[in-house]
Image (cartoon, rainbow, N blue to C red; front, side, top):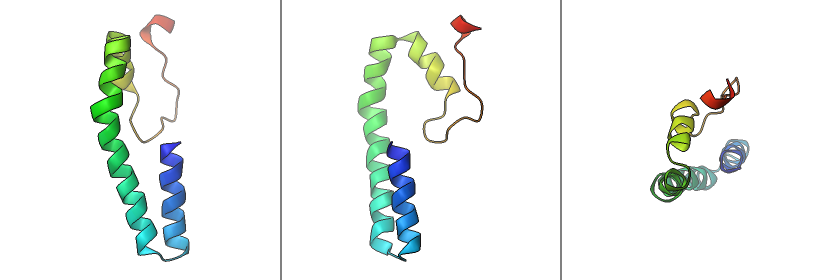
Length: 75
């Protein structure tokens, strides 16, 4: 959802030639990147442990994968 918001804001910035909307998209990306790394990811690591660390090592944070990732327990 966050990536979609950034893509929509970036599209609006281009379509409307608005530097302010581009700044808003960039600011949104920066704030969410910091929040995810400092708050959400440590919480997920505490909750799910090694399973989450394995997931995180195979799934990129912002760019979706072309093929789905399957955990080693499902292979």
